[in-house]
Image (tube, rainbow, N blue to C red; front, side, top):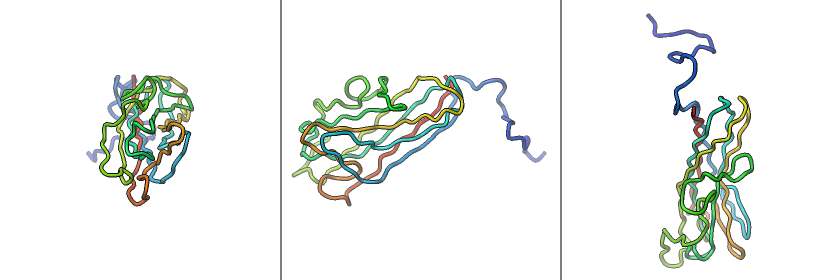
Length: 178
């Protein structure tokens, strides 16, 4: 026996009927290494588009973002981050902060700055679950967006003073059988 089950594109070895609950149907990865900044507004850190394979599936999302702010502590500039699904804030976000945000900016000094702090970058690792259902073949856009209070600047994938001290922001979306 050659070990080849078949050549039909519709053949699913070992699957009879439907996948079991918790089965990962697909994984989509996105990354952004470009550097940018925003003052008094919002900026997309990274995003991914998933073409839905199951109508009833849910999405588990993980993101790692690199950022810096104009001041030596994040408290002073009050950065906030949120997951967005097809343009709407995800309210099931599971991380620091209020519902739907991965930080509301209040008491956010978990990483100390040394000296002026202008060469420091910060990293946040966060996740959420999207439970909206759809239609097979739908393109679902999932992103993480950051914002900053008035009079401050938020930098994506770099430090405040130098672009050479940068990083990369990533997102991983898993489509899961509920």
